[in-house]
Length: 105
Image (tube, rainbow, N blue to C red):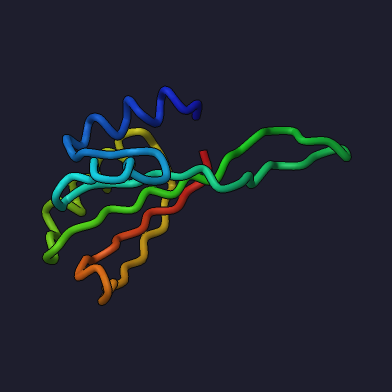
């Protein structure tokens, strides 16, 4: 999935988002998303890259637990036929929940 398609997909969530981070002073109030493409997970065959796959990470930040919003993100990912894994952590220093979705695209 190309960068532009990822942006289009994230727009479907209706949640503000940015790549890697928001510019200083421009971060919206929660909820918001950050997405990253930190590496690749290519499929190899016959000593060559058979299919290029990027690792996509989407991080949803909320100041309170919001299962409905989390499900909205999950529904968009499922609609686009992505296979994702989810994890969650409370960031004490920021007073935010981070729900992380990781997948190959």
